[in-house]
Image 1 (tube, rainbow, N blue to C red):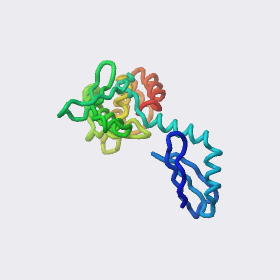
Image 2 (image 1 turned 30 degrees about the vertical axis):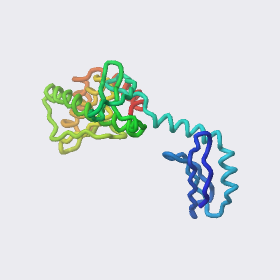
Image 3 (image 1 turned 60 degrees about the vertical axis):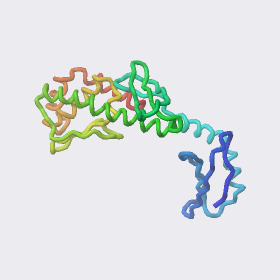
Image 4 (image 1 turned 30 degrees about the horizontal axis):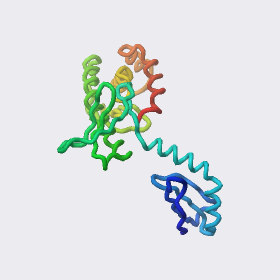
Length: 229
């Protein structure tokens, strides 16, 4: 394993990881460093030449990673709110406070780091999802005369919600970032599955009875999906 010099103006650490299974060199951007994975038989000079050859590409990837890790705004109920950090007064706990124009983040200066900011925002969204979405869920349970056995709020990657044969519903916390009409569409979709565990004509008839503009809501959900946290 070679000790390699830091990369670029930001002096990003470069870590060398030899692997006997490899037949070529791989470069990748990892949290806080560049990783160089190589076969066992490789010269340090060859690695340095490769880093120099791919200098521009590595710089671009580092800038993209920095942009992704620095959260500057977040959607809430369909509106994009800039994040404004504040130094809390003595005795005040770290918290996120929503105003009409921004999400104010009260964090000590030493904790105003990307991962801490993201953690505070995610805690805010989780609390709001349980509050706002639960209120709407109760509304639609009354409208549809349906009640799930259990409701869980989770961070899901590929689904906005799910319903099991045991009448349990999982709801994606990320949905609280969507407009209220889209949240309603997701809730009605999952509640409809309590009666129809499929996507047949009867299922869609029930959904469209309560959400006539479901296709438009679905289009907004698909458009906003990649943009939200």
